[in-house]
Length: 177
Image (cartoon, rainbow, N blue to C red; front, side, top):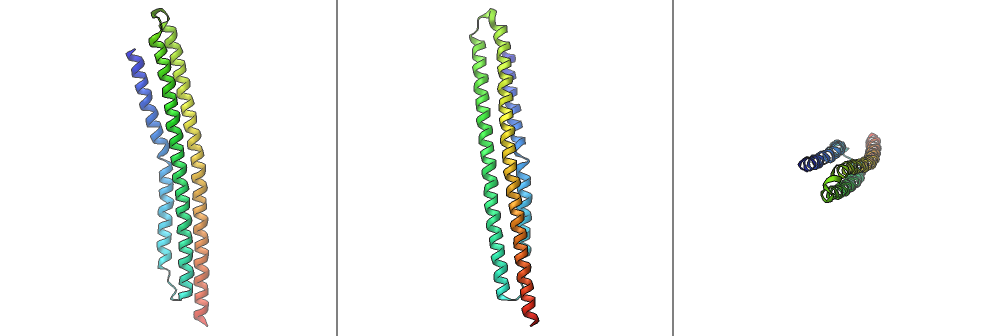
């Protein structure tokens, strides 16, 4: 019984560590792009043409970009939260199955304990497999959403750069007249 209890506790720790490491890669991707966008917006603010009309267009482009980046960051956080929720639910479900299997072992007759224990080990393995499979699917789905959101951020940045360049070119053209 002590071995079984130790196995369950070790399994719990292993799955909690797995769940923590699975979400960690999602965060740096988001952080890198957010930092990049912040840096770009900071550079854009420094691009002053001296022409009020052009500066207004540049500010408008910066605002649009910031709004889009914020929207995509929200999508990323929602996807990550949803994945974490699914993973927690899967872990809880697996723990219930494991507890139920162990309960049957405890209730079994002394002569049937070996058979019940073997059956419980099989059910434990199945429950852990199902939980891991669900966690992997949740992570995969979240990663797809994160990639899409980061692509949308990049598009917003490119569009803002285009608008800034157009405004600067227009200001230079007006200054040349």
